[in-house]
Image (cartoon, one colour):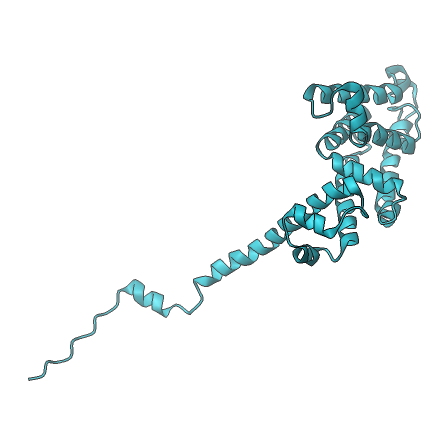
Length: 249
């Protein structure tokens, strides 16, 4: 006599629920995370390439550096590098634009409401920090200027000039209000650049004469203090002059 067919066991609720889920629901969050990581990874790779290029361009210049050298230093393939930058010139200009942003950042903070001594003292310290921590950037910018800035002329004529004109007006307001002695704003800015970037652009000369560099913490603080004094003692209005100077209308 044939046995009746065995009754099917009911699947546990969680198993039934899992089976009912549309295909791909669990994969979606993982796929989303992977997609979110891609832009970060691309930006990280781009930063590594720019950093490698800066080190080589600042030492050998545009024409003395090859794409293969940059790729090797960045530990990427040449084809991978050319995925991010179409050619060596585009890579070079991208490096210059990045360092220009870093170089100009301390100047952006100037405002007429600030105390000029505090603002300029802070600016000097920040620029010397850049000269200490990113000397290659300063040297590459110097090299580009010496060569006539053939690939950076547009940025100089537009962004740099616009920023300097705005901040020159801030300095002029400090002078008009009697908080600074009369000084041509452009010349003050040029002087600040020269004094602070000298320690990066001529680091070998500084070390040969002083026996130390900005990497020496004591020498760094000594440099900050002396550059601040050189500038501020020359342009700060003494209290009597500041009180006698007419306020700007």
